[in-house]
Amino acid sequence: MAKEKTIYSCTECGGNSPKWLGKCPHCNAWNTLLEGVAESASPVKNRYSTQRQGLAKASEVTTLADIDATDMQRTPTGHEELDRVLGGGIVEGGVVLIGGDPGIGKSTLLLQALDSLQRAGQSTLYVTGEESGAQIALRSRRLGLEGSQVRVLAEIQLEKILATLEATKPDVAVVDSIQTVYSDQLTSAPGSVAQVRECAAHLTRAAKSSGVCIILVGHVTKDGALAGPRVLEHMVDTVLYFEGDTHSSFRLVRAIKNRFGAVNEIGVFAMTEKGLKGVTNPSAMFLSQHSEPVPGSCVMVTLEGTRPLLVEIQALVDDGGPNPRRLSVGLDRDRLAMLLAVLHRHAGVACMDQDVFVNAVGGVRISEPAADLAVMLAIASSLRGKAMPKGFLAFGEVGLAGEVRPAPRGQDRLREAAKLGFSVAVVPKANAPKKPIEGLTIHPVERIEEALDLVRSLQ
Image 1: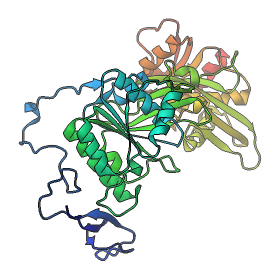
Image 2 (image 1 turned 60 degrees about the vertical axis):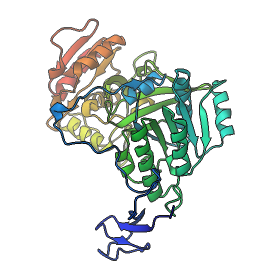
Image 3 (image 1 turned 45 degrees about the vertical axis):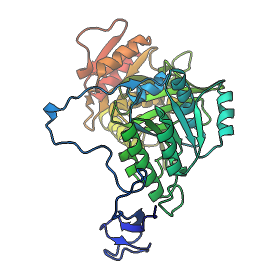
Image 4 (image 1 turned 30 degrees about the vertical axis):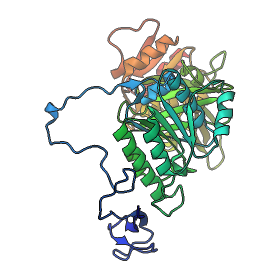
């Protein structure tokens, strides 16, 4: 088979050039030419060639009402926390992209999942481009997976990987990692934008046409984003991010995109000598370890997808110099500055000459505004040097006018708090339940100054 011609296309105007140039000859834009392959004029017999193919066979135009829509059958991976972020398990023909820092545990988790699937009767294949088969075998023994029948292929050439998928017909295949795979049809090095885009497109087509579930491991940049073209995330069905500090035993798997389930779901794992184990009560890792309440600490209930999590917010207010510092970990720093202004303007709590440090315990990141009330109460507690009552929690958004706005799914948050033994809650008035929750005393508030007065009376 003759090799297809390499061309360079402009991302701005779409024009083509037979060779790479720093400036597009059509629109004069700089650094916009990307390597690609030209369409072949004659039919290509090899189904795995780089000629563009559809993801599925052409179908007739029909209406939505006439389409027989059924739920996708999901196969559990044997890891409840991973199934949670996947939407219940893997899907036939689905393509999953998982990224994370080096050494965070991506390969470990996927090897454990493949072993569980294989023992459940699924046909599996682990394609490794970064390690040898011997290294994978050593890891499996360290994880206690003796006698594992997971098939391993050490290969980085796309055409050979596709041929192996066609020959072995696995139910689930892992490609670790997509940045190491290359196609002979392109002259650029593995990991380049063109190679990653083309290889991911071919693997996606293979998954859709054959029904195999393919899990791609992706590298991340120093900023934590997935390396390669952004179109990579658009191609796949599910995008998962592996988060956590390599110095901590806890890991979070977060769903950023999921065509078969809810987004922003998280799975919580603990790294042990035998690999990653799911954490059944993740709130315990985000809560205080103090025997008695301490000043500057306030517990809130945040939502991660459909899961309510109790997180301790810690604040430290100390005398500052002429330029007081504002530092937050796990929370938005700009929002912290706004909350301090609201606290001064509407509640009379001044921190202009104070250093303010705020931290979300356990390394969790909270992006929802429902943390506002807990942050402000923690700051006031640290400034006054008085601790919150035992079993106290608060949540709610605080506006610039000092009003306390409701948080979504307030009932679920309160029920989770009561289940974990909390007894006092300060919540927005709109989140107050119509029926009392056993064991939980709820104090609804409408304004931030009302919340602060209430807390002072409870301390």
